[in-house]
Amino acid sequence: MSSSHVDGPELGPPETVEVSDGVFAYIQPDGSWWINNTGFLVGARGVTSIDACSTERRTRAYLEAVSRVSRAPVTTLVNTHHHGDHTFGNGLFAGATIVAHEGTRTEMLDMAPPGAYPFWTPVEWGELEITPPFLTYSDGVTLWADDLRCEVRHVGMPAHTTNDSIVWIPERKVLFCGDLLFNGGTPFQLMGSIGGAIEVLESVIAPLGAETVVPGHGPVSGPDLVDDVLGYLRFVQRTAAGAHAAGLTPLQAAREVDLGDYAGLLDVERIVGNLHRAYAELDGAGYGAPIDLAAALADMVTYNGGRPLSCYA
Image (cartoon, rainbow, N blue to C red; front, side, top):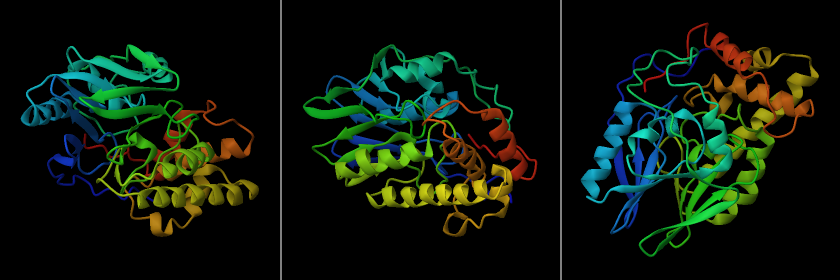
């Protein structure tokens, strides 16, 4: 089975959406591989950005969009996790304090540079330098946009990655959740945990009572998105349990399973990586424990008909 991606789609322009007074989401269609969302909060003396983008071109376009809303400089940049689509553009935020969980810094220091990713179609990354956060926390930190309180919290366990954080604005019921949630795209837990993600969504995210949710990829949503992603993650667990017991490999299991309601999501090949992670947990690996990422990604390419995974960043 191949990716649900249409070859060479015409992607719409990014959209700046004011989700609450002075709080903006920056939505990049179509939300597939390496095409993420960001956001920003406008204060009188400075702007707080939530994440960067994957390429120089996309990050500069985002910064231009911010400048059309506010003449104030971006003084603070929060990274929700270490993945390059959310961090490769960090170095273009001149003068900003880069804030993230301590695990985000550790992972970024070990990251391969842009262009060293053979599993995807070629991308014009531009002139980028990996720039890790230099203000880190273990549990969380409170940021203020003037008098608007923003709670930056580590979620407590591996989920999408080992170092996920959220930005929660309680007064406005607005949640920026990074890649804990995808809207219209297949969730991806290869570098985190299936079981951990379920626990985080049930015990950390759902109880917040967010009314507006800005996912890491895809359109702005409401709280129902939490149940949608939980449904997919439980589907992965059920599929893994049956296939593992039957002696199938993750790739074999992915080829045999009927994706049903999830077949229309972008980047369906992620089912293979998710099954690799679910199998590891069935074998007793702890949440976020190291596994063979290259082998899982190679299986995803095989599932995709031997073609590199489609990336339009």
